[in-house]
Image (tube, rainbow, N blue to C red; front, side, top):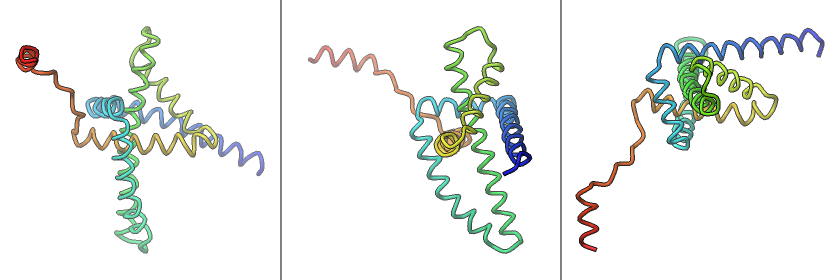
Amino acid sequence: MNMGAVLAVFATLLTTGIAFVGLLMTWSLLLPRVVERAHVRLRQTPWRCFFLGLSWLLLAVPAIGILLSIPAGLGQMLGWVGIFVLLTIASIGATGLATLMVHRLRDETTYISSQTALLRSAGALSLAVVFPVLGWLIILPLVAICSLGAAGFALLHWKPRTKSAPNLTEAVHATHTS
């Protein structure tokens, strides 16, 4: 591998990381309610987000693979549209994950603005994903699957169940009968 190829790979990773941060900032500004729902889902039910994202991925990948294997035409176009839709949904969920990181960062340092904290969190997420081997094989798949599930919940308006407070009359009745 010559020096030009190494620089090309490095430049590609660098510009992709910068563009990823910009994409997360854009989703945060354009779809704040959806991003907030994805954030709430990731904070309260991360395993459900993981399993929903995994199930959607297991359903979509074979279908997209079949569509892409069809010789040129409408089928291949639908396969590429499917990839585009999955990546778009996952990027919205990744913005929810970056927002979760923002809330944890702002708990530690309260003197930074929310947009600055989001910029830092998106940058940290981007750097973690491009970290050699560990980022590519562990962080990227986990982030992608959880993000896909969180955005799926957010786009479908499926909110986590809230724990209801016990009824006061039932609590008083229970203490008097025992």
